[in-house]
Figure (tube, rainbow, N blue to C red):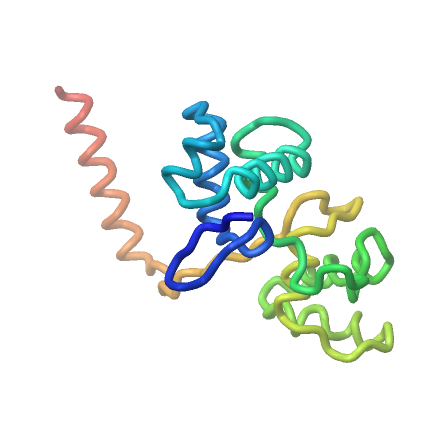
Length: 177
């Protein structure tokens, strides 16, 4: 089987970089290229390109570009092994509830009491983030994501007044034109 060669290393379907997998899907789906042409443009063998495209299509359950690209993301750093905290378990739900309850704490600190109560060793931050992002529970059926909060001080009364006057001035200027 021919593999494409990048920097002295051969790639098959398993170890093709995610960016290359995305390019193959886009070329096939959007540009309607045959696998032979994809091989010519990317250096990925026809059979590897076909395997990658069909696997993404199967994982996505359809031929929607966004779903197929989303299916490329690695699901686990431990393929074939049981998850440390299975989905839809009491522990999974408790960890998610604690993350929501203790919103000012880092994920690891918020989840620590539930993990300790379950008799587990502390979990890696990435495992807890995975629980927050991928697991669902009845009270919060969406991913839990935390952004970086800006470290701005609160406005004092004078600053609020200045902003209000500025906004009023802008509004008056717009209304006059």
